[in-house]
Image 1 (cartoon, rainbow, N blue to C red):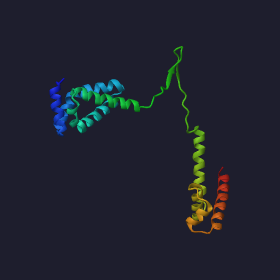
Image 2: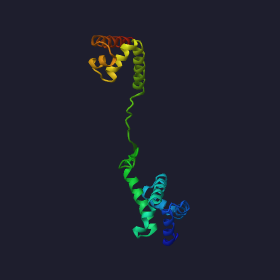
Image 3: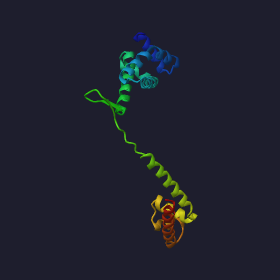
Image 4: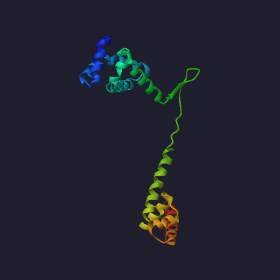
Length: 189
């Protein structure tokens, strides 16, 4: 490992945005900083991400180092350690899918599938397809009025104002369209 004087000189050059000095600093200290991060995270990929973040911080904050009056390696290690702890804190707790009871028997957790059974999924897809087919059977303007009423939540008054049609016409379109949908969906069942 390189001594403090050499590391201080490299940090001084990095503070002046010397890329070659950053590369040399990386070659000199990356192994140790990666080990510190890996020890905390126990995940090589996450530790490598922390190492990259550490050297980005060094690149942007190297000018602050002389004011700290500490060992360069201690400063670098504390940056890597703090970044690794931050990553560890942001992780969501993991629940293993298998567990052992008191007798040593291995069990698996049952995870509910929110999408329903295959039959439920098939029926939902068929109903969605029927609804689309039935909507296509309604004329364009009444269909647009129905969609605005139910998908955008417009009242009959708002709907009449938006499409520029009389209130009675809009009410009739929505009512007739609903009746046609009911009949069409009933036939398709």
